[in-house]
Image (tube, rainbow, N blue to C red; front, top):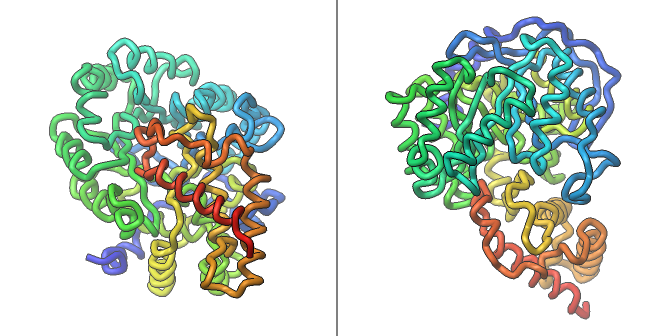
Length: 458
């Protein structure tokens, strides 16, 4: 079944029955790239319910791209601290405007996310927010290390119970078996759920379809309360085409929907890329709705699926929070024409030679100091702006312009000691990339391309 046929019967009932008033206010909005300025409607946040009838905001706050002191990111300054004051302001605004689902993990932001999240949320009544965190035992899945990670989450978050606890990002061959079954971790967490210290137990998936199928089939035994998958209007049909090991979101959603398992969505904006589309794709959406942000199209798409409980957005600035709240107050259903437009944009995007990095930073730190997400972000940005020089296919003057633009911005945005030519192909990053990008191969491609530009006499 194609996407449009699947959604046609849902569009009328999906959103209108889930919008509840919580008092969205009118901020003095600011503008960020890919986000629109304007007023936020009052009292119209969209909610869904979980398996226990808990009301959950369709917009979830992902705490993995939080601001750092002095601006920039941890990629730019690995020793920087998170800007707790700004984080508090963003969380305050989100809660005030109806967001109640906050998602973090022990490994986010070099281990600083849980503590920062706990500080920000502890300033509000416990009944105002729901917290999700994870068993992120990627590197050390012994019973002792896993149990220590579990209890540390309670301390850092300053809570006596965790609303949504996830087995974090499985998907490799026998990954789930080693990290959660053989060591007794899952049995322990089931008992913690029975004791009430975990209210909902689920998992997040990136990887092989056969592994996904195995864990979904465990529902009869473990009664999963929810599951977290990557989904957006590109990944619905093209995730596998963009990167061979990835599974299309229509399959993931369909299998969970059959079992009535509530779904949490990660990467609804594809690591922010759907909020900053290249000019050609952005023009198609802006021509239809000049005052609507690019990000809002992606959130409206997610809102069309009734099994989705919440959709996570990693927000690093107040204007992101404002626009995302605006997009959910309430979520406006897509028309058939708008769905068809997104399908065309998705098809064009999927056939654009972009590197599918979502800047999650799971690959960091690189043992040899490379700024892996920064290198990919620079390449993708130049690609989107038409600054990838292709000799012989463009007029020579345009080739020289693109050549200068790429090299100049590369040296400005990425420290020379952290550029692609310092990759030795150790493969350490490959074990951690949830998008299954062949990172060393991509680094060699960018290194070869950069050297060609440097050596060019054009």
